[in-house]
Length: 159
Ligand SMILES: [Zn+2]
Image (tube, rainbow, N blue to C red):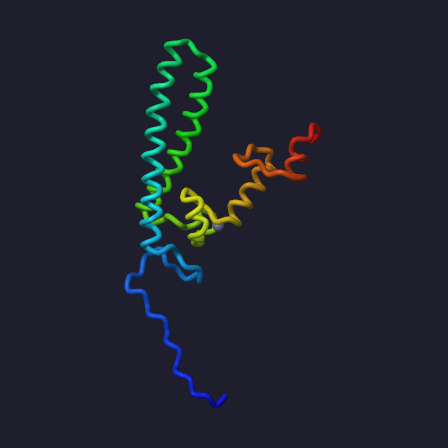
């Protein structure tokens, strides 16, 4: 190799090193990405708060009308909305504390692609999968049931 090539430029050191940046080799979400996630989460929070307020009004009406069927629907909407709001608030608190984007289990950075799809994720995909499998094995209820032999075995009457 006689061709003389210019020395490949070493990528510039980022001027702002965030505490989220660690030594695992996987890039932690950049500040701009975190800002976008915060905006998204705040929008989702406003949406959920409005949903809860509407559900409260609807529930009052259904109660006044003694409309049990409608009350049941509103109640389940209320429960899922409240749970979603709780997840959003946890994610926002993690943003405030600088722990956002780090897996709760293995403490590795959660890929930004996952956070963009699921901004309330608290764990990386492998840890989430392990937790889901462990929950199925314990016979617990997964929010997203895993189809396949494991769930069939779990629902079998014997054992
Ligand atoms: Zn993990």
